[in-house]
Image 1 (tube, helix red, strand yellow):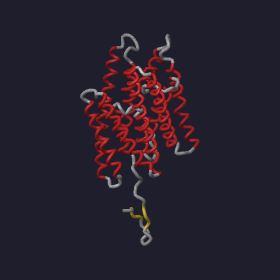
Image 2 (cartoon, one colour; image 1 turned 60 degrees about the vertical axis):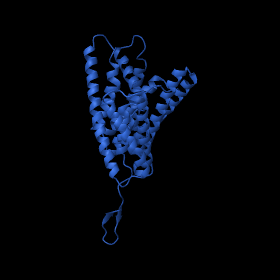
Image 3 (tube, helix red, strand yellow; image 1 turned 90 degrees about the vertical axis):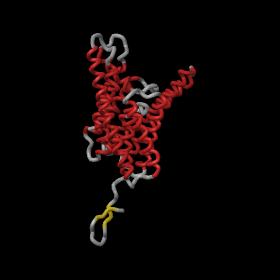
Image 4 (cartoon, one colour; image 1 turned 30 degrees about the vertical axis):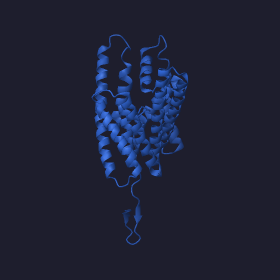
Length: 319
């Protein structure tokens, strides 16, 4: 339920509500209403996410199965993100605190990815968490390079920023491909059908929104372009705008598919959905919180194996 609310808050709060102002004349009431709805949804999912992260963190502290590296990196990093998200309720965070929050969320995600990669049963969660963490790291580095280019009027830093943003987008595609493979249960036919269900509407919407800034286009196309531009990260990758918008749309559709029909492994589905919802923006409170919740929720290793007692033929858990 929290993940579904997070998906709705992402689309409304980061995409639709910021795209409405200036769209047409005489829609002041619509602008005010959309802003209030976006604020309500953001506060609601932030409170739920903080509560979930605190509960999962306490459970992780009590778990005897976690290794020392995870305890030393993921749990303190998650605590930093939780504290800064709560501080963001009162007022916007300073840029330095946003960087601190982003680095803490990235470190948490990478620690969780490493802990899950060592076991085949949890490898899907680990791979997607790792891709999301590195994507957030490269998106953050790209934005820092853009800031440096603006301060020093350095074109070289700007070119590097575009290259790094393109690498981050490639990591987003890797996370997307891994999630689609998981949803298709590794069956080639199911994976292709799932990919078609995701990419056909994504490319259609991306192509529709790509020319939203051209003169004389309809209000629907302008609205689509503004919404997807708000949901996409800056600086933009060295890709056509239609492709960038399609990737953003595909990430959101796939995140929704994970929780609308979770299947047997509900926990892993939620982890994959939250990782995709971070959208490479760990310097923003809610995406950083989704990375932390996904890391704390991700299974660190499978349930204890059952050993068969040859004497009485009863299964007993390994101690």
